[in-house]
Amino acid sequence: MSVNQRKAKQLLATKRAELEKESKLSKEARETVELDQQSVGRLSRMDAMQQKAMADAQERTRALDLQRIEMAERRIHDDEYGFCLSCGEEIAEGRLALDPMAERCIKCA
Image 1 (spheres, rainbow, N blue to C red):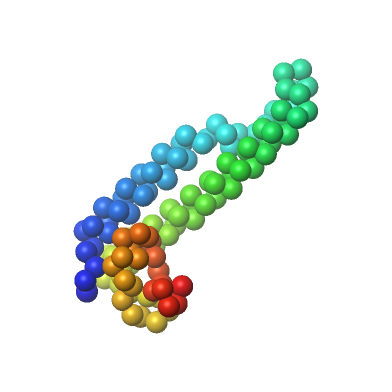
Image 2: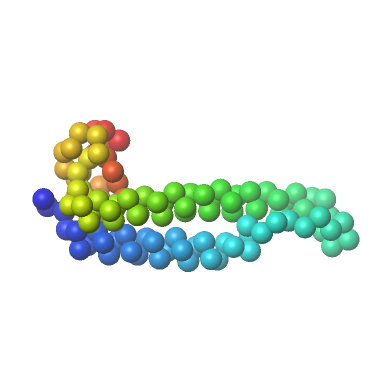
């Protein structure tokens, strides 16, 4: 196989660290919006609720990416990394360089 598994592990570890850092940074934005009429007006509270909803959506995306990283690491461990889950053909090295979590070749994606 032409896929460099050491490089893939490094890319996955870097991506995991980035996602975990982003998650920590956005923790405050995901906290419950308080309903305090004295300190926050109606429009400001609605803005805060919208920002919380967006932060929650981003956190769900990060959680899915972390799952994809775990699955890619499992495929590396099982010597199945770099092969399409649908057709079994090799995934192009360029595709894996852009998305080290890719599970399918371009044809099957």
